[in-house]
Length: 205
Image (cartoon, rainbow, N blue to C red; front, side):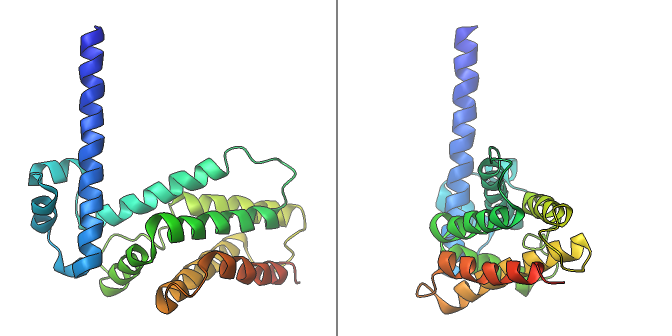
């Protein structure tokens, strides 16, 4: 039994390694040549894996980008898993934006985010990532807005879901500006400064 367990564990580790290799290879090629110019064959050839291996882990090129954002959403869940109840809605919002921008800046990097934005803008048939309302980030925002409204911290006269969409549009905009202006634009600090203004507006009647 111990041998069988060890073999299963090794197979799982091999699968994770293969998926990571495909993912990092694809992102590297997207950055170098542009998303639309890279084929699945290019990815598998560079990663030295079969097309069957690719489709075991990813259904399409779009799903490679979606995987990046799945990882971000897992990170949000980790950040919010053990917060003190005393944190206000404003503090939670700034914490979420900090987690979002730090992940984009330090884990994804500006070139990957440029690939994501360009791929989402250039073809409306692609898998929706940036405005997918089923993502966990939307759930966290809904909880924050509901808390702020329930505690009369956010007094803006606007339906909760409209506030959530306002916040997501603001987040996408600040990341877009970073992609536009480049490394001289400090994404993390600019986002904190900007969202403090947004929070001030949420507290206005």
